[in-house]
Image (tube, rainbow, N blue to C red; front, top):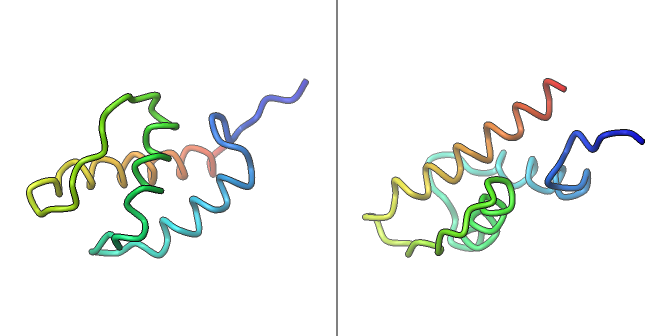
Length: 78
């Protein structure tokens, strides 16, 4: 049986993530907050509650986006 290189995501979820992350530059659009946090939790297995969208939570959002970008890089190398 072939290993899923996208684990814990499926290939289609991976492609969706790749598309959405590429659209994020200096600003995380509010419409992507739930998606980013949910995908971050799926990839990390985290049970952390989603932070608010206020400026004081910026470090948490940066961490989530960084984890997602690192995941994409790992998958691309495989």
